[in-house]
Amino acid sequence: MFHQKQAAARPPKPDTTKWLCPEGPYLDYVTKLDALYPGTGTTDPLNHHISSRVGQSRSVLLELTPDQKWSRQTFKDGAEIKNHFTDRQQNDVLGKTPVLSQRIYILEGLDPDFVQAYGSYFFMDPRFFVRQERNDLWNLNHNESVIHDTDILLSRIDPERYFRIKYREVRHFGPQLRDWRTVCAATGRHVAAIGFQWNLDNNAAVARKFSFWSRMGRDDSWDVVILCDPPVHQVHILSRPMVTDIFQNEPFQGGYPDFIKREDANPKTPQSLDAPPRTSLLDDICFYYENHYQSLINQPGSQAPLTPKVATVVPLKIICAHYLKLIDYFEVILTKLAKIEWQLSRQSDWEEYTGPAIEEQWSSLQLSSRRLSEFINDVDCILRDLRIPIQASPPDLGTSTTTSRCRSDWQQSCDEDFRYIYHRLQSMKIKVDQLITSTMGLSNIVGSRQALSEARRSVKEAKSTKTLTVVGLVFIPLAYTCALFSMSDQFRPGAHLFWVYFAVSVPLVFVVFAGTFIIQLGYDEDAAWSFEKFKRACLQGLGKGKGKGRSG
Image 1 (cartoon, rainbow, N blue to C red):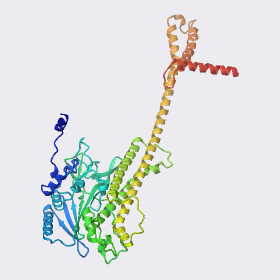
Image 2: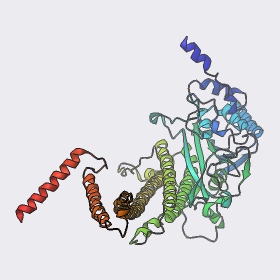
Image 3: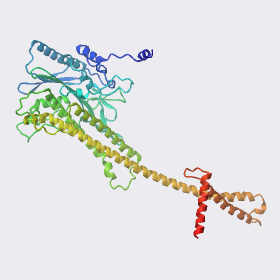
Image 4: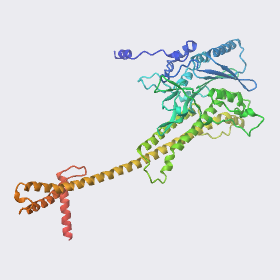
């Protein structure tokens, strides 16, 4: 009975599998896999505020030609890519497929029509698209969340087939960036900025994702599908969910530096000095493969066939370059925040340090520490998913020179880059933690000074109160005696018995003072009066008096 009531109270599971792609064979495949991978058929609830994904994608095919160059074919809408895969399918059936075909498909955005076209031809695991879409690990607004982005078991990770990478791209937004909770309107990715003096910085690290999937064919043929995010043109401010703002932005300090290894410039080959567009990851990948493929994949004397890992060389290098620019940006932030160190050196005047200023410094440092923790976690996931050891392994003496050189050119170099990025971010995190400790120390110093000032003020007020108490103790017996003797004319000033007033009031003053002193002997450190305390104090006083008498 209880289980029936519980099942009746639980809302029915919505049929939301159509969010990924329209009806078709791939949607049927996704629906069947939803039971194996819970949450696959449900969109991320945090993405409800982003604009429609329809018409927001573009796709490019890079195909390696016999002369070892990459040709580009662009697909502007879902119909073109569907026609392309239809033609490929017919050629596969008729046996017209080239003997050796090595293709890289790049999809920017997740237009349902494009997803349907890719999925209906390759039938890849739908988590390839779902994990690219996710922005939230769990939907914390509900006790029973059906949304999750659980990592793949370490034993099941195969970077030769699939992996996903999170990275950051630093963009300059200018003074229009004023809200902490700002996300990209196309992807829902967070636009993370750092605050100084209670204001946001004009630069921000935009969250990005890159996904890789590959499939081997016959005779060393293969297909690769790459997913990447579109550039940021419009943003959503979560405090105003119904409004979409157009933010003009540009790469931070001109963008990431070029990573092609060059000798001295040759004026006869000006094309080698062309710069990447830096408009989006898709455009940059196409630029490097079309213009610098031979410089990146340099395998002298190697007859080994190319593998799908070739398609990861340029994207991983670009991601490493973005991370280096992120490190450069945080170096600027740490320079601003590290002013506390030289201000603390040989400091003697603390008047300028107040509670609000220290709180603002601590808040900025805490935010920087949290951001760096996120970046370190992302790079740690990259090392895990690409199976890159954190510590470099010693060279294998049994490995041939050619094999070692080939791996060093386009695999070991990426491994070294990610290891360097990981250690740099960790060292910056340690630096920020040290600054937080210094700020807490400064806060304790300022707090101690304020407490000392308050204590001195309290002592001054206590002395003033003591003076008033003494004055009161003097005048109370006098006033009492005056009131007592005012009952008869013979005690008035000038009368023959006026001297009696002084004979009674002066001893009474001493009696009141002595009585007050004796009563105070019964108070302990907690200002509580007890007879035992009074008795011990009296005995101690009598003991000291006897000791002085004997010594005399």
